[in-house]
Image (cartoon, rainbow, N blue to C red; front, top):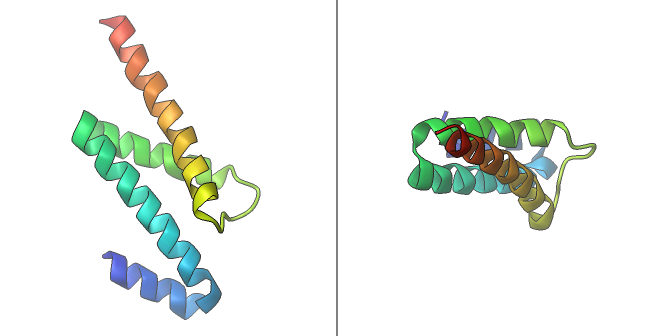
Length: 90
């Protein structure tokens, strides 16, 4: 599903949540693309899963950019631990 279709789906469900969904989409896409560029597609997919797990672990849905960034930071820590662990085994 493309980003526009996903945003329209959120708007049809609850117009108030559309902006929150757009922030989430932008944050996850930026994180995914950065990880893919630096570490490849496999790590990007794993990092995206980490990001989604961090989102699931939150008590409330983030509404500010800073809150979304916190999720990204937690996912980046998991990525760093995974990358660091693979280097230590080599």
